[in-house]
Every structure is written in C-alpha cells, then in structure tokens.
Length: 151
Image 1 (cartoon, helix red, strand yellow):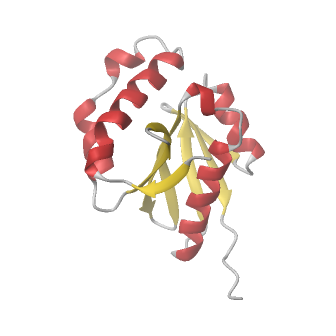
Image 2: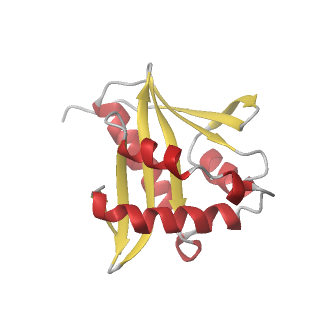
Image 3: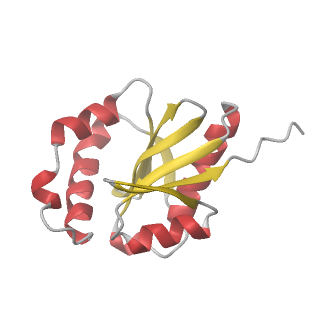
C-alpha cells in the first residue's frame, strides 16, 4: 500500500518526471510543449501550497498539491502514475485534501480540469464535485467540505 507523506525537496525530480509523463498521456496537443517548469516549480515551492506525495516502495505513485484561495482549497495538481489509476488512489488524495480544508474551516474544494480530461472529470464527479463554470482553462469543479466532527 502506498504511503502518503509531506513533500520534501528531494521529491521534486520524481514529481517533475511524473508530471511530464502525465501531460503527454492526457493527449492534449501541444500540452508538453506548453508546460512551464518554472511555473510548476514555483507552485510546488509556494509557501501557501501543501503537497502530499504518495510513495510505493521506491517509486512515486502520485501526488496532490493544493493552496488556500478565499474560502476554499484549490487543487493545483493531482497526478497519478497510470498503473495507480482506477484503484481508488485519486479518491484517497481528494479525501485527504477535504480533511485539510475541514481542519482549516474552509467551505469547499475546487479544481480546474481540461474539458478533454474525461477520466479526471469522472473521478471528481464520483467524489462529489460538480461542474460550476467553464473557463478558458477548462471546467472549474467544486465540492462542499464536510466539517470535521469534534469527537
């Protein structure tokens, strides 16, 4: 079972490689050429961002990066290796972001997905996200946060 850990700088090369591979496999023409590594590095290193990495033995299975934005957490990146897709790991990462939002007292999670990224849209809809706006970058999807119970 993969282990979910806080991001460390040593994770960056594996994250960058996985991100580049993921962009190519999404099939959007020109996406790999449009990828801005400096922007990516800045988002991962942003003080406001939280990144959780999922390691399975010595291999990076995936990661999620999210940042607070007004009254919600915005999911900047959610990437899984192809052999970890369709096994519940994306939902596990989304649930973890939901817990982080609840701990911060935020009301929702948001993510923006390319219109053509049907698998990711399907996963997010199954996890309770709804499409709220179609922007130039793709669908903005939102899910209400379930407040933490104080047991």
